[in-house]
Image (cartoon, rainbow, N blue to C red):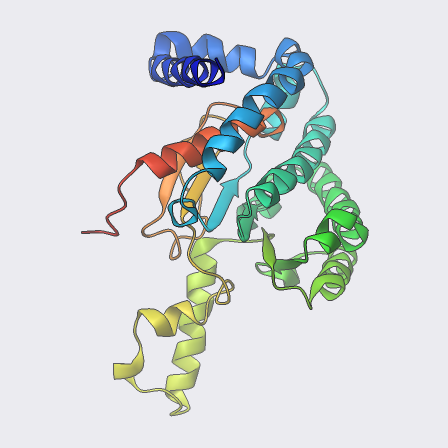
Length: 296
């Protein structure tokens, strides 16, 4: 009987994924996924379906699961607008969602999680009032991280990368606090990209190489993939295996341009605050089903 229930559940999941591939179903599904109705019942349904999907994933050979998951957390504002909420509440809901996703990733024993929190373009293009709200949320979140039992019990090292000099002093102080509180941990690594741009990161790496070459510390023949990778903000991390983007957008938006050369991508229509545990498991199951070729 248990096996039959699992078979029915898997068949239901597969059918849903196939239907969502068609625009006729995807539009209404996107609306429902981000509605107040979905928000009120998703936790109940997600608990049952999540347990089933988690069991399937944990039964797999660990080498088939991604070791490094990166997420472009998109859709806070659209989530707020679709629910007649102020944008501030959308960003706040997004912050709380990240806490949940961190727990789900830790439960699967995935050692690396990287999230795109704020791009360098956001700083110059978004209204100042909105950016100030985001800064306050980052400070609040980083201060919570420094004390969070989940972080310390799982020995999660916090790493913040980007052009941090663009951030206010109070945000940089919160970053220092979170990083110092977790600097001795090595079991998991949680990286937050703030004031980050992939092109800017590559430019900074090239500048570093050019300076070293001018000083005679490195020859032209020594400049290769490894030389550039070792000078990126994320030099201590493996490249992402799986990149997830929420809210229906199917673009990279200047995120980890060098590192994601051979990553697998998963796009979902769900806005970030509505992203569920089942959505995460679907993304990972989709990743497991693929044959990675690394450019070959």
